[in-house]
Length: 199
Image (cartoon, rainbow, N blue to C red; front, side, top):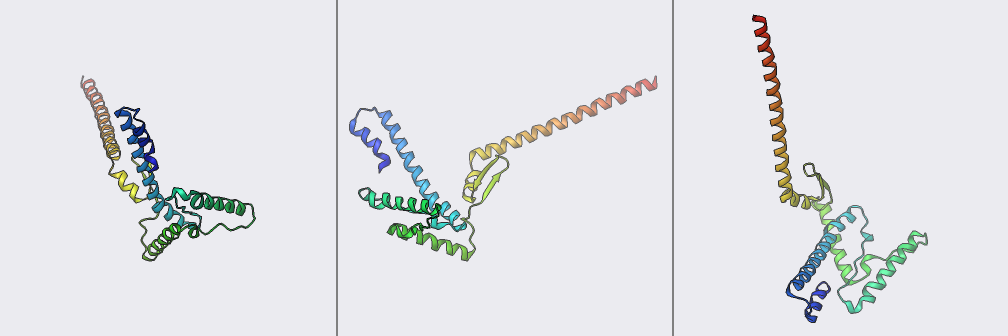
């Protein structure tokens, strides 16, 4: 994996101590996890958003699995896409390439996604559609029910709920205290009036 290359290079040179190697290893692992999250997001959320907007013809999938064929599999198709897009915007009417025609991987992956989307439309399953949900307590906006579920079970959300409840209790206490003080003050005035009146 390319993401682990700094770690393996550091191991080969043996110029770093154990702590520095561990730090490099952790950053490489974070990069891998981040790329996996990106791929998952693109496969699920981006596709769904584009499908709902009827813009899936704008999603291009390039096969980067073989570095030796980078020029044929990645560079040339991406240049064709960019040129067609720019020419199309300049009214030259050169059509953008069909995303499924770029590679076998693109054809297979995009066809599967289209089938899933069609099934979702036919069954009325709206669980993957992108919706913004705002947590009024935390003042955060989540995109989709998956992020919402993660948020409401998070430590920060529970902590914010506790703080809001405590703030509400304190405000209620202060209101009650103020009310008691005002009743005590009016009661003293009434008592003083009774004493003056009886004299």
